[in-house]
Image 1 (spheres, rainbow, N blue to C red):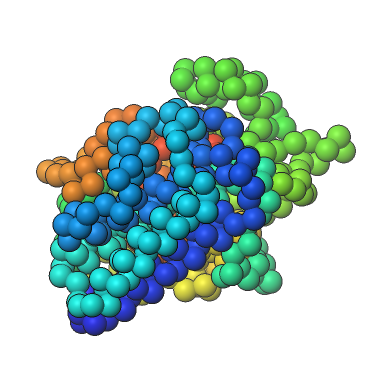
Image 2: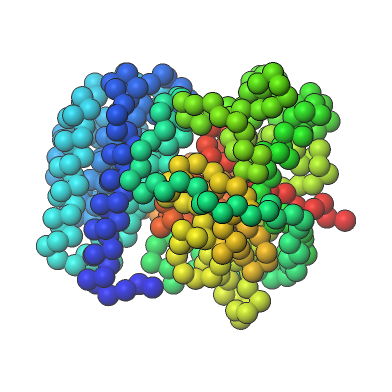
Length: 435
């Protein structure tokens, strides 16, 4: 629902405040050494990243949409990610963390003051949402950076822990009839990213997709039977990755010597929760598991059809979320960092799709078989660096993780990473082979 002008302004203010609260909580209680961290290709120095989030908000909301002058004259040379190479971000003359936070406060206060002075135009509202969702995505990056670097678990004010009631793991496959399906986002939505544009008809064969993501217990079978040693389960690129990384299990797993596994959750090793979804696996590992099980990864179109198809809705209008058109509630999806980690895959049946799949949104991102490519007629949005530079080199993930803000997501939302990444909060579900 688009809402009235005053509703839009109030929502934008609330979302800005929530995104900034989350950013500050995710970097809280870290010292200067931790805020810079080691030079790794998969993370940013968090002190730089906090400044980048503020710069992005200033650039698009204040400077681009309103024509205002920069608050810091050196901001572009420090924080413009399209021009500042990743490997150089540790070498920049970055402001201290207090000065970085002060810059963020100055931008934030000015943004909220502009929203309070008059209603935003449609163009201004677009850039507010862009900045909020950008901060949301970096919030998730802060969370997986803390995991990667074994920093303490963040303390989030929204955290409530995992739901107490566990339910059996959904087994078997959902039968999806295939046919003509509208893949992609509707023009009626108030904001979508350029790679979701626009809904277009695709033809799908009937398929069967797992009702639940692959669990730790299921993936442990693959590890224990020697799946990482069997060349026949791996693609050529996947085997080369496995040999180079010496991977023998998902990231952050270790054997205890008693035949049991532990997983590292931030800075603590804990017994592996067997009914939780496997997480921190690369696309290569997911693909190898599928080959071992004589299954396959779903295409992104199949994933979206399983999430959005509703036999009660006239053909041509898929659901916005697996359960319908209303935004996520806590009993439907593990999002927003509320559980501070994944939960059992049988939990939250209220979030099931009409096809009978559970946890398609939240808990873990799900790898698909699809390459990240543009939809027909693709036109880059104002933030041209968001999608286009990554077409053809990344794989598509769908669904969101426990750390993803719910306001960011819908069935059409496309995430994308290279096939080797396993630091992100990614798992997968499988499909039956086409016969």
